[in-house]
Length: 130
Image (cartoon, rainbow, N blue to C red; front, side):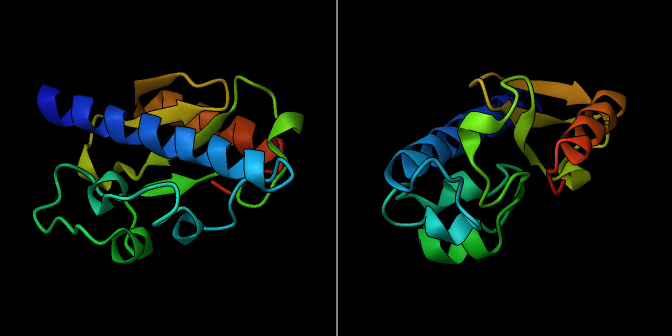
């Protein structure tokens, strides 16, 4: 389980970095969907999928359509977001005790369900779509 959590955190770091690179080339806007990152910013489909998923997909475009991570601020201007807000999280159906969250400031951590709910409330209050 610890190895899978570390792999999930690595995926979240890669996704978060891809969001930033995408925004740098798109007037500061986050992608509207994960599929916008597939190919140019993410070349391995495994990054979009939970390491707990049995059916890994190498094609990034196909994997992006089944992404196991949720993009919280699609299409929004990153520079206007509070740096402590979550920008993505792994869908919690893979781990009942918690999930991996990536933040605007680059931090990635594993949080319990109660903390996740509090973070998602902050994101909703800031105009996110968790």
